[in-house]
Length: 291
Image 1 (cartoon, one colour):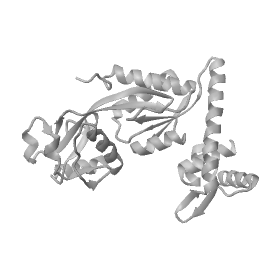
Image 2: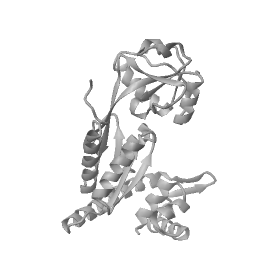
Image 3: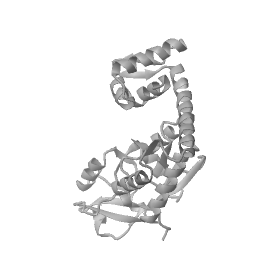
Image 4: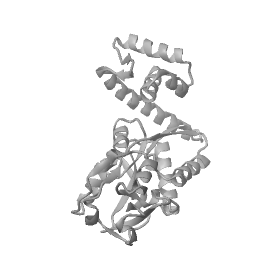
């Protein structure tokens, strides 16, 4: 186990004990590996305090290079393994926590059935975190709504934005909800995703209700909407039709969101995963043409 792998594992896990589990070493071995690396380099990479660990300035630079080096080593392993007639490796896939379970389990199961010797680590984060992780190579592949600027982007999900309102709301009897009728409503939703929604809606020369309640947990959002504390906007693939006390309505004008699988990395495993996941999503109607 290389010292660089240990360093990256510590940074990703946030503490030594979880990093030890990731790299299958004891905590003392992880601590020793880090100490030895710092001694060899002659610099302090991590500051240790009550709040946990934090990268030093030089540590941030070295971790970025370490990720790049480890990524290139992984590509070499994949290429040599493929040359020998079998596929092995490790893949880090990033997505939002609210991705439909059927979609996530479907693409993972489909890929694992074809490539059982490739390990997949799933990272969950906000849309903004996924973009940052792709840029710093924390993840190999991530779900994004703006596919420009990546080495490769493939279609993944095409979905419509719906308004969620309480069944007691005055608009609950409407079949469609004009965006302008929501402008004075209290908006409930994740702060990290509000900027993306704002950008999408402004492209249509529309306005988004002011974010009154910044809430990241979907169950809490639904509870607050059910209690008629405000309204929420949610992708239709994330809406459970069995939810009680809440109605979902399409907007006027109708707003669609395209989600892509994107990467900055060129490797056999990354290419295989993206191709398989995109194809599976299309076959199971997660990517549809705009009606």
